[in-house]
Image (tube, rainbow, N blue to C red; front, side):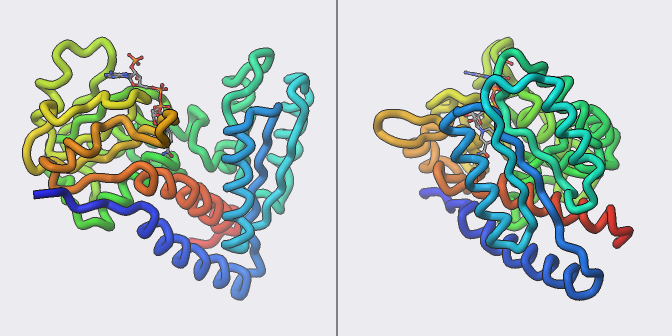
Length: 289
Ligand code: NAP
């Protein structure tokens, strides 16, 4: 039986509507307009597209957006001064520095300079630590999107075996962290696989929920999953034939109970969760529960 598609493209629209209503209420009752600053350095084409999408979504939802495009030769000191200004700017509730940064800029220094209370990407070590301890201020956007996809698709995580392929700081580690917490939409037993894992298939075949963020097309094939698995494919790989995920979609969908497509799965959720964090930050700064 072919799998049910977990359509992030549709679920994200539903969340956008909820956010729009929340923003309207914030404006009406508290005269607060959430604000997001995005900083882009250099001419990376993919980064320009991502920043453009974020700006567009801000406009669509009624979030004040400040886009700052800087030349590729910007010096670290100037970037840090800009972040300092934005940290103090009351119109701005979220600061996002588009990665990757040019090589001459220390990424850690830049990300650590962002006020943790405006760190809507949740990359600051204070926010990573809070996530790990189980009382996050902001949830990182892609992992949060994955958790929302599971919850809103009625997929139970409590007591399940979750296997995550990939241990990056932006996807693998935080989603593993979120799903083993003793909380609703979590409470799973989590295994993380990476390139050092011996016999990955022996782990992935045990998964009730398999989350793949490897950045390699067909990193997971049909022989690596059990019948009835739920598959979340985070991968985005641009091939000559088009965009594909990390999972051999056509073959795996025949065994899975549910699966995310690429495109239209996890992708559209990431931006929406960024907007959600910005609104949450605006509420936090306004002292609103
Ligand atoms: P990353 O930083 O390159 O990390 C990839 C991870 O996968 C690493 O931990 C690596 O192991 C592991 N890995 C690679 N090949 C593997 C294999 N064959 N078997 C097992 N593990 C393997 O990537 P990322 O930033 O997490 O992103 C992963 C993918 O998700 C990319 O395609 C990216 O474009 C996509 N992505 C999508 C969104 C979205 O919104 N849709 C957001 C973020 C990322 P080692 O640590 O041992 O090297």
